[in-house]
Amino acid sequence: MNHLHVWPLLLATLLLQTAHADPIYKSVDSAGNVTYSSTPPAGVKAEKVDVPPPPTEEDTRQATERVKQAEERASEMESNRLEQQAREQARATEEARQREAQKPVVIHHPVYVPQSGYYPPIPRMPPPTLPPAPPVRPVRPLPN
Image (tube, rainbow, N blue to C red; front, side):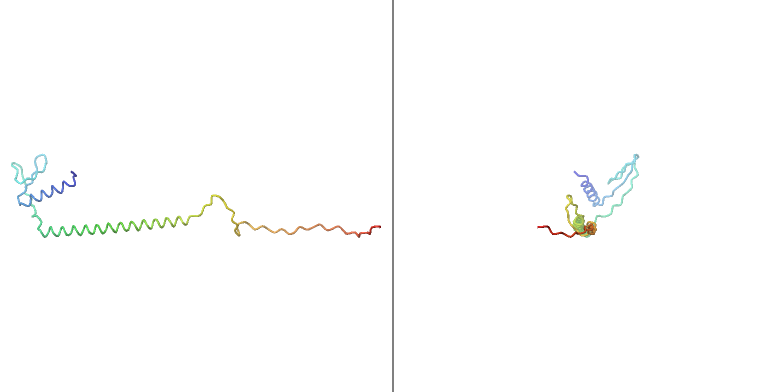
């Protein structure tokens, strides 16, 4: 049996026993052990414990109502927490997707793409100058 279930049972038993309005005595022996009993022990100083009366039917009803309200609030808070978690998860996913979209494109195999300004301009060379032509001599007619 789980120990968490034992304590409420013990407390309920104690409360049911005190509902009969029997006096309860608390005594401490020479070893320092505390004992509670319905009859005062002989030879030991006992102190009578005042036990409050059990709760009324109205008190029980009000306590049950408060427990239901607390459970409803807890359920509402849990659903709000789950909704908040879902919104945060969606936001984180969207941010990751946007970061992924903003990453630069990495080209593993370079491709030539001509672009203006990509290469430095090539200076134009002036046309080569030709050396001066040799003087032309008149041609003599050939004898027939």
